[in-house]
Image (cartoon, rainbow, N blue to C red; front, side):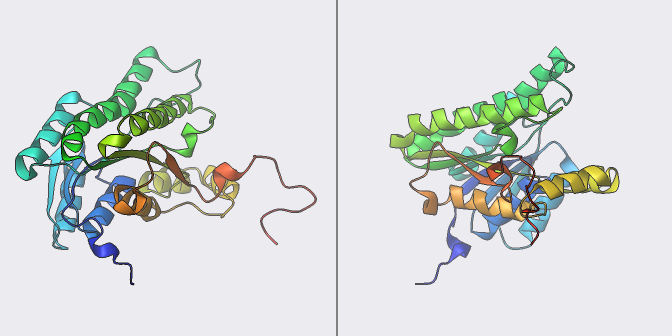
Length: 270
């Protein structure tokens, strides 16, 4: 029997935040390709409008909302919009992010609070609101974008580590709490992904850092947004029906490596 991914998410209603570029855009395209009907959110109106219009050209049903997904009002409006139009919500993909970078002793209280509000509290609030229709339906899937940085620490990115670890904690708690209500809650943990901001900031602006990160990945390359999107679609689908409260790392083997340098020339190139 042939596997038909084209209709795996047929007529499922999905909200995707941070959908204007990168992983959010790729996930929106993948969900639509598998049959989902979408509401896309992004702070950048031109970006999210462009993505929505491009997906519409494929025949998919897509709406967009210019909004700061880190605010309660935007999340409330998004959930209400899909319920008013479709009467249900099947998939929530939390993907937006903002954070203050710097050493833990240098970041500001204001910046940390804002980071938490936008990139963790807003994730929880979206989950909270999505659970209402999903529990009533007896079925739903929530997929949040965490990171391999939620599993370890990074120099100068401590706030990001906090946020992404918090998403995993929330995912585990909500996953077990609502497992018998038919709602699955999971996360994806990308490694370094070659999104446009990474390409412009590192490859063009700091090539030595770009290459250093790439060489630290056992596969020797950056991931593609589409590779994360494939995992998001899987977790949102019935194919992941026995998965909840967990996460999937998609990182080219980065998290599997202890960080020790190769010995006796026994490195990845042979």
